[in-house]
Image (cartoon, rainbow, N blue to C red; front, top):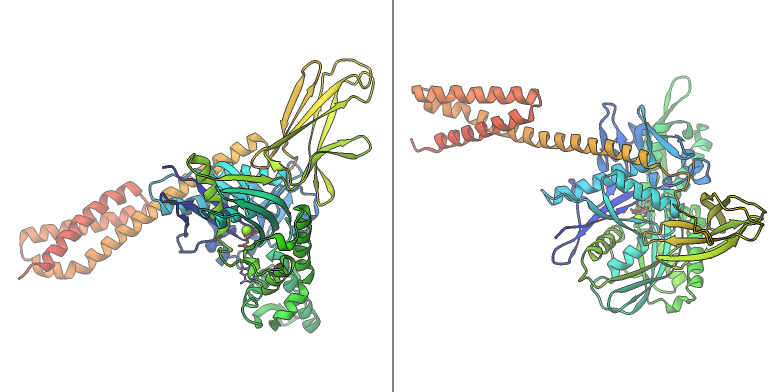
Length: 608
Ligand SMILES: Nc1ncnc2c1ncn2[C@@H]1O[C@H](COP(=O)(O)OP(=O)(O)OP(=O)(O)O)[C@@H](O)[C@H]1O
Ligand SMILES: [Mg+2]
């Protein structure tokens, strides 16, 4: 059976899961044994790419070339508030790219956000492939926040393609969590999923019914509300306090900022289980004419952090209330509340959630792993026709056209079940109008966002109002929008997949795919070389250890001297092949080393 991997591509952490042949979901640990991998990429001074824990560990000393939080940038335009906000706080360089989009500078190269996300996806694919040696795992279901818009979904799909993955479906994170919660159980329940991660917040209300039907009733969220915002509040508070005490602004020092970021997150997490903790950052900065070292030492209590973040928690609460309203339900009609995301470990967040839904949340799922498990479940269901699973998700944003007078004409409402399509007929507004411009809009948080525009040209001459244009909007199961326009009389038609102007062109995607593939070949080659080298070194060391003993036993015979000479030769040849990093030669000598070691062991264990 072919496996599909489920990938939770998180702002802070990513996770990969599969469903075993016997139907049991399994979260796959990385080489270090961790079930989640930090969504961090770095390039070292020597040009080596690091992803995950290894990138996180060097983030303080290589702050400028370590990139994190890319999910907050994906599918966004350079000239947007979220991008400005990220630029103002991160330690790496963000610049404007070719299609009003964003590029990230690491060492001397510029990368699109999709490429950085692809590096994380490639790493997750590798984690899975190392766990199932010999298997190539190309098919994936990737999750996105439910509130992601068309551009963000499309960009995530592109990232998957760049990583060499066949993305068979994009699914919403809270929906994936609900799948993991209800999978294999027979139930009739209305549940709320409260997902507060590192970068985003989503709340979804679903109906789970017997026979494996998962129907989303309503969803809402904020793609710029998550753990990072809590960290920034703590950081700002520490920086301001330090300024008052020492008159020094730590914002000017990248390394200090990176240390503060880590410390703020750490103390926030500690305060979820204890009520007081310390921030301790010795030698945070040198200051004054004699470069005096200053230290940051500050006790922090839970109440202070809660006060600093009170409005963030209030925003979550408000979104829960509006989702209940959109679902036409009251809190008492919710049977179960499922907590997802690392931030739901914070007691004040749990309390807020319990208050809006008037019940204690269920502790039945693992907040860091359920999303990837849900993605794997959906992946299996898409391949396996036997699987009883029906997933009905909704679109988080209303879709429509911008008509004369900047009026938003809605075609598909928020919380409509997807896939869906809607058609509307428009007439020309001028005599002899030869072209019609169609502006496709998405309504997001009461603002109209332009998704894309296209021109239907070559219309026949006619007086105004005579030509009828039929416009069809479709949203597929990935939540991706396409639009189709037709001149009703002539049948002239045109369709577009709406790629917002912040997306990549097809050529760019294929170029990026090629370089990602090249990296993979190199990486696999170097991983193999490393494995073979380590094995050869171990064999050589074992032989060298036994050498004096064997020499004492056999050196008196011609045969023995010859064998010892050969062993010395094999050791020297291996050493040379390792120095040259010659994989084929090391492999060849390793076989001779194994034979020699076996022979040596035989000699020393022989009764005298
Ligand atoms: N014990 C804890 N107390 C408070 N916060 C925590 C705790 N453990 C983890 N977190 C926070 O949870 C966040 C990470 O959560 P998670 O891994 O679910 O996010 P993500 O999936 O990467 O992000 P997103 O879903 O928003 O894209 C971080 O901000 C982290 O600091
Ligand atoms: Mg998450």
